[in-house]
Every structure is written in structure tokens, then in C-alpha cells.
Image 1 (cartoon, rainbow, N blue to C red):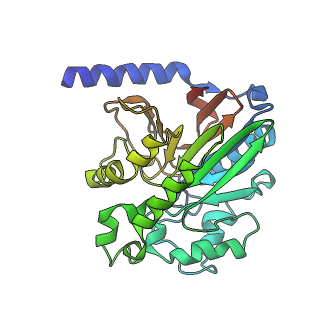
Image 2: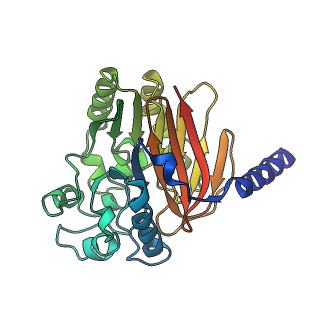
Length: 311
């Protein structure tokens, strides 16, 4: 088993060497519905946060993303206390200041937001023109050039018992009605008729991570059956600060972990791993009627890997 794992690790390492390429041909984004995915950001500009933010801005001049899907943990480490918390300025406003990033940001709560005032994260919608968070979980449909896309943002921390039990650290998690959210998700996906369906949460369902295994087990038990039932195309998340693409036997879903937009962490392949990288960065999702491509971008603008789905 150890030899097999070492061989898989070597194979993935070699593969990633060949797939890395500086993104210079922006024509691949023409006539597509494009958006960014970014998460695990808030480091007051330190580590790689500021240069990655600048890269997002300069690339946006060519790509023209419609919005930023912000998959949680915008603020490390204790969330925010109010809409006037200085972290809004030092973690977000002054960092993502490029004119091309003055677009809608559609966020969800991460575990670090749950350490602070979660309501303030929603209320910041009334302060910032681009921060758009209508609820803790919500859905939007987009129609571009004859292509329809539904994105569903979910609130994963209350679906995990670990956070519900640690009331001193995550006081608001246990106050949320997990069953109500799951019933809502099932209802939304039942009525979905769009060409593509993407569900975004903060926590991974399947991934390599040194974090408590119970996090994945809870989502595998509660969330994954609903996603499989409705055959969603992609489940994208953050939380563990690296890039991962996983396909699980018996599931048609692409499980994608988006890396941190600041401080990244080590990663190893597991069963089902198609690709993994410990580089920090962000992703660009590009969709038309027949194809979905999610490109993982490192801090230098290299395309590390592309998740591709075809109709």
C-alpha cells in the first residue's frame, strides 16, 4: 500500500509539472460565463494575499469575471465583531482594490466567521456595494449567451456536529436549523432546470486534510446524498488551504477544493484524487452550453490544472 501511495504521489507530481502553464491565451474565456472562486483570504495582506489579489485584478482585465464566489473564511482568525470592524478594511477593502474587482462578491460563512459575529457578515451587504449576501444560504441563476447556470451557496458549519458542540468557540453554529437548510437545498435542487448546477460550501465532503475526520463524515452523511440525488455537476469548497480535485466511485460529481488566497498548506493524494497542489491561489470557472472548465491558478498566474465537464 505504501509503494502504491508513493507511486501515485510521484505520478501526480510529474503530471502537475507538465500541466502548469502561464495563462496568456485569454481567448478561452471569450463568449463564456466566467467567475472567480476565492476563499480563506483574510491575512491583512500578508503571506501571499496581496499579490494574489493584484493578480486577480490584472487577470480580470482580460477575463471579465461576472462575480467572485467567496467560499468562506474571509476573515481570520476570530471573524468580525461588527460591520465597523477594521478587518473589513485591512482584510478586504484595501486588498481587493483593483477596479476590475469592484464586482459582486457572493460570500458564504466559514468556520472563522462563526468565531465572531456572523450577523455582521450578512449586514455588511448594507455597507458595501459589492458585498452581496442575502442570507446564510441562498441560490442564484445566471443566463449568459444561451447558457443557464444555477449556483447554490450553503452554510456548512451548522451541518457539522463539531461546531455545534463547541459553543464557546462557535456560539452561533448550534443556533442554526440544519434540517431546515437541508430541506431547503433538496427543494431548490428538485426544481432546478438549468444547464449547469454548482453547489458551494466552505467545508469539503471528500479531501485530504489533517482536520478532524468527523467534519467530512458529517457532510458525507447529511449533504452528499442530496447532491448525488440531484446529480449536481460540481461541489466546490475551501477550508483546507490547497487545491484538490476528487472523483468518488459511484458519484458523478466533481468535488473541488479551492486553495487559499493567502496562506496555503501541504496536501497529499487520497483515493479518488485526480489532482492536488499545495500552492496558494484562486480558480476561474468558465462555462458555455456544452462545457464547464474550472482552472486552478497559482500566485504566479500559472494554470496548475483544469477540471473539465462536458454535456
